[in-house]
Image (cartoon, rainbow, N blue to C red; front, side):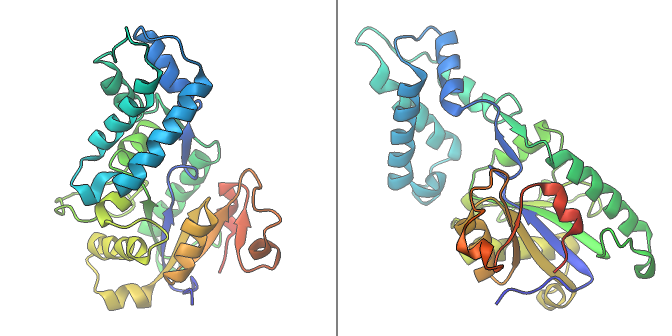
Length: 293
């Protein structure tokens, strides 16, 4: 049973890829463009796309969760995919340029490879104003626009450690707090950054929809505010927002959270879970301003 958001505090988390940001151009096109700039030729974007899909599928099967269980760094995992994408496309006289892997790894760690959805910055601007008011107000003066006394914002994502760098390069500020890493001393107060923590599947060792990923986010909330588990249960509601029905919405629900399906492309408009009212669906992030449990 999901725990409705009726307490004074709110833990608000977002999925990353497909919810906050997306590729600036199709991944296969970006791979192809960089490879051509480095002198490779003789392949189409569609051939790169097909080869990339095969490489990604094979690596995910043999070394799941970005190589975590294999003791592999995520950067090496991606390097293997890049190499496996292009090797089948090379002619006998071609070799893979040594600069290709570093160039693509760098590209997909920054705004060079990704962009925010248009509704993200307006919503986070709204959230900054509300969180600023929370920090300087007493409970009786909290705005009806955002009726929680304290909001902690996190990212829960089936991804690797590039996520924070990507978000920062796109204009959001992100705390260094991550699950499983030593807690760093910080002089910033909760709410000083747009994102208070990041819970990565790579760090947790499990991927959404597994409840351990959502449990990790609660642990990071406790760490950020120095709370006891009982205080989290008593004082904070839990809300997760994402674009995937199974991984985000049902995963959050099964972990005891409330959830919102962000369906910009209206993929789920006729889904039974949506039409019968059991799943809350939005097509624009700014609609969260009006969300209530």
